[in-house]
Length: 405
Image 1: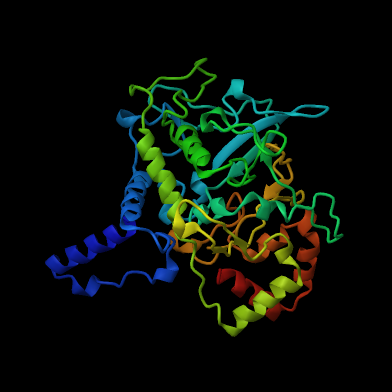
Image 2: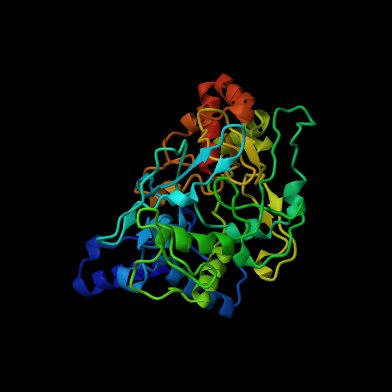
């Protein structure tokens, strides 16, 4: 893994240079996100290592980067497999059609803004007609294989679009059409599939998410998406010197396997009395209505993912989060006020890969979990109100619980 390699090189260099006073221990295993899930075979660990290397590969213009792009590697947006710094946020744009409907503005380069480009090649700009601007940071990527391995029926069992139980929470699935490159038949939900990945659950599986990230974020083409991003300023696609496809299918598959087999974020201090009290309060004020503590996987081709508890603290459904978090951007069946419930696992160690400062919410706008809760309105309004009614000590206990995840 990249992390282990860097630590080993540092220790070796200090040994040969006599800088014993600089030697430090590697971070505790519970303080980092990078690492394979338990139970992989030796061959699977080799694939994991290859995928880790490709995930960290920085592309250049000579190896296919661009001509339009946002970042040069996967890890730019997911340092240490954690969430991205706000400085590398991505922007999506579109236009709400009067009377109903949403236009991704593909003829203007939408829905993702590629704001960087090769020298002498114009980057994209947001067109003036766009009225939906969605700024998003890269989420942590650990534990994604477990999320992918949760059966549809487990997630769908929590759907309550009409709020039949009257608790004010009405989660719904984002049902989307599979892109052609997946080669899927008509899906089980009126021809569509359940979305799981992305801030609004707009991707079905990790293959879709990975292929699109290579093309959209880095301008790296593959057999799945062999054409460069469309640039409205030049009236077409293309422009870099590398023939398409620019990355082999085997590399895509290794990265997908790597993402599937990254371990889930480890818990910390879970036996601490304040953390235990905070966990009770989390349940009492009904945060768990959306942030369901655990889901379960079924049998899976990767045995290490089979029949596992997945303590992600999410129902993987869409919820109306109110005006303060709205972006007006429609994605599949997700409206401009709806977001997929973000898994809370890893919340307490995300700062370790961000220079000591955490950045929360879909756009990293705050480093305060108290402010995060204050911005939860819509279906979360009652839980927010209950949190505000807690004593300062109780609020601190709940925050301590969140930071233990």
